[in-house]
Length: 423
Image 1 (cartoon, one colour):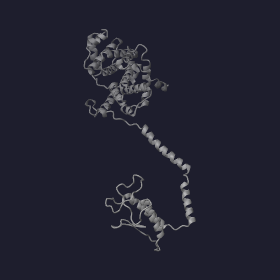
Image 2: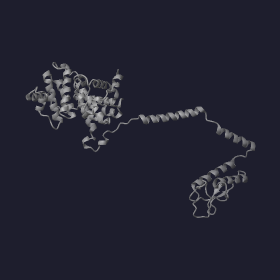
Image 3: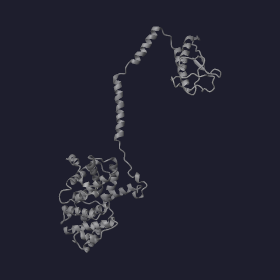
Image 4: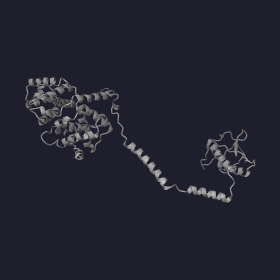
């Protein structure tokens, strides 16, 4: 059947002839009834198609409403109607082309169609498709869960000129090169004939208390420890002058880092007047000349600040990290680790102490250049220092961090599981 349109009659159905030119009147009438039923819900005259108003569906019964084709307010045939007409036309054409079947053949064909529809899909195919789909979905979900990105920790300081976010990476690349140049031999105590490791530990523990009583900056303590080790590596000292070396190193660090510098008489007073003013000034001159006036060396402090920022630390994690690294200052065996490595290990151990599990993220690994596996050996030593911090005679660091000013960081339970996993 063919559909044609003109101005007077919107849609005219013309019968289709077969190849022999015979009119298939009966089948054409059947197709017309099908189209009429599809379009107008089973009623209507086949000579024209009803037009549709602005609301295509009835609000009461959900079927297409009949409308008056002579009313100019009605809209033309919509696309939905056109699609239905095309579908009806296609089914009509297929029916006219199909050969006429007998009643038995027609019944057998219907039975075959119903059997094909009801035949189930093989279980093996259903399961394989379900397993593949579930596996793909699981892989996507696991990637979403475990994929960790490296965060831009300087993004929040883009407008802060003091943070120098534009070239902070260049600064830390320079610090890493410089820490390699300022390497301290871990065996320098072997060339000292009158002092030993225990004397050094006593000096460091005392200086940490002096630093706390004078309320000096954190940078000052880190630089003081660095100056002492660098000087003792190059200069032999008798034991009665060892305390003087510590006082002068702190005096130089204060001149380099502090705004308000303690005077020489204050340092003489805290040493119980064991040294005269002249001795302090002479040792100051000797130390500066031995170090070639090179005070600008990267200490563990600059790396601590960077790694704490990468770890998105809070005050509790920060105080605990500084407590652990100050415990390392007292121990001579920790000199073998570079300042950046020691700082990374202190932050990692503090995370394990607070959270009970290692949380060394990809961001921390990227900015520190040390993986969690690299830090385990050093972290094991730090945990052992934490375990015995309150015992023995050298408890200056523990007393300092047992106050409210430092958040009672020393009272945190050590990360014993790190030591146990290493055994």
